[in-house]
Image (cartoon, rainbow, N blue to C red):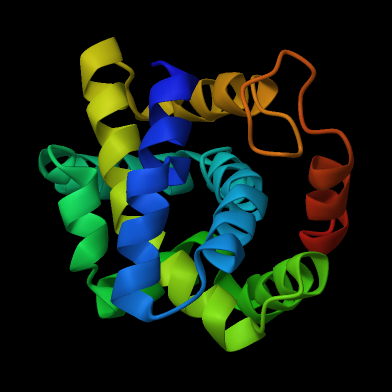
Length: 178
């Protein structure tokens, strides 16, 4: 799975423009939220995949969404926010409001807008990860490792990097009680 393709599909100009137009939110705000949120989303999914039941549930969700990885920009233009909110609830559980508040504080974008942006990208993120899971042949038991490899290749700016996430993952640990 190529982290550059996943990040590019969700952080590229076309994707940011599609989200901005769909939600009527400034492109710079959308970009800062998406970039800040990806490590949180991936980290929470990795934590969920650390249990057998969580990995199985995530594998089902990725499989369900994988068929929608074809044209991410079109998906973002017509994002299903109801589905996105359900995904966020599954990923973050009872920590969702804390995550939204933290991203809001870090980006200066209001919590409601952060929630809409995350709900907008969540189905597409699952689609991209599902496609990557299928192409790599990763089973449910390998999802935690797969997500760890992706996270290890991201910097706190959301760009590809071999340095890892550092302070963002430290922040996740405190939110998730590690």
